[in-house]
Amino acid sequence: MKLKNMTLTNFHKFGHVSVDFDESITYLVGNNGAGKSSLGLAALWFIFQGIAEKSSGGNKPLIGERFRFIGTSGASTKGELTLFDEKKGEEIKVVRKMTKDTSVLTFEAKEGTMIDQNWLNDLFNICLISPQAFLTLSSKDQARQLGIDTSEFDAKIKELKAEATDINRDLKRFGEIVPVPEMKIVDIAELNERKEVIRVKLSKQYQANRDENSRLRKEYDEEIYKIRDNFEKQKSEENEKNVQRKAVSETINDILNSCNYIGFDATQFIKEINSFAEKKYPAGKEIELDLSKIKEPKYIDPEMPDDTELREIDQKITSASEINIAASDYKRYIEKVNERAIIVQKQFENKEEQKEQEYSRIAYIRNKKLPFDNLSIDEDGGLLCNDKPIREPYFSSGELIRIVPILMASQNPDMKYIFIQHFNLLDELTQKSVVEYLTDEGFQLCIEVVGEKPVKDAHCLILRDCKIVEDKTENAEQVKIL
Image (cartoon, rainbow, N blue to C red; front, side, top):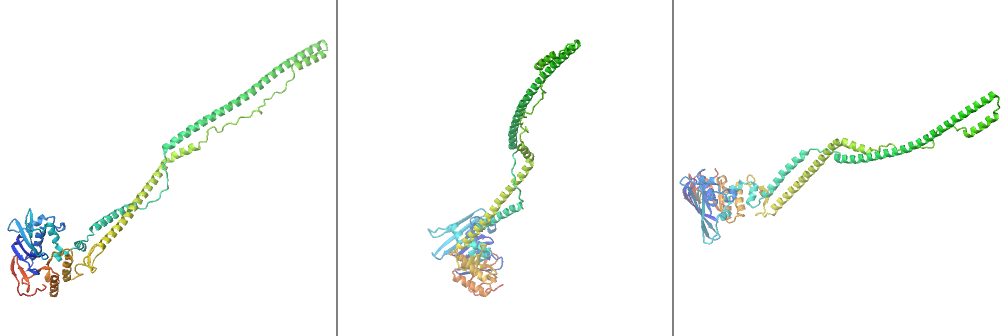
């Protein structure tokens, strides 16, 4: 697809201009500000994309740009462009009219030809039409022009790296976690319940022991009482007998004294009386209280049962507050350890996902088919040619002007129009080699030349103040580097 002719009305600083393009080379000659770039590039952008935002593929108009491209001769601007399809031998006319509020696109083509804005978007590539535009791109954006876009992977990796930064900050926040001895929380309520159960049990046991000791003591005391009572009875009886014996003895003595007084021999009588008294009141045995046969019972001693368990619980209750503080410290320690372990796991998963994304990114790049064998993609997703970035100083200006059109044509073989800027900066041999190389490859060149003299044996449009002052082919001096 090549450009045949173009007509602009009230476009930028052009009032009305018509251009016929040579099928091979057209030179736009003029000093800076003469309108060369506006005619060779900006006008095409206007007609093809409607002054749309580049990143939107022509689908998002830049409303503010309309005022800049609408000239001073009216409220609207109009551009007409005739394209020639070399393969089909057909012409397609594209007409765009723009006001500050609207942009209207129409086509004139052979019946049955399917063309619309999307068709224009596919056909028009600023980086093909202007190699200089391609060279201003970063290596990554150059790769995107070839359909190799690692931005999805890059965005994910960037997101993961940002997440890793947050994770590392969270880990740093923990600092050194000092181990804390394990300590279990004391349930004071449960201890009090156990204490009450034990207290009741001990109280019952204590009461039972007291009752048993009382019973044993009572039985023992009753036995002692019986023995003592019997002893007292025996002793009382013996005392009574002693009184009687004493009375008998005194009576016998009185009788004996009376008999002696009257001279009566009462020996035999006294003897018989004594014999009777001894039989009647025999001499008693000495009575002693003997408690040796009664054994004291084995009392339950101590009556109070062993309360060690109760005292231990009391001790636990007393120290529960301190223990629970230590247990809370241990709990917080475990929580921090577990929380840190979760973050460490996140860190590991983040690193693994970063690796996976890097591998996927590399696999994506390796699986992409590049149009030429000497092209490659670096680790950052940037385009390389012979392992070098496609820009100066890695390549000369002449090399770049030859490389870019061939490279971009591999993506869009239909469009053959190229606008070459800064042509004067190339030396004479490079100018010649660039023109010959690109025209031999079938490209239609529109070359911007700074100056006022036409190019020798070439189709030249000489511009001054956004007007074409000459349109001719004549013998002229070859353009030199300024």
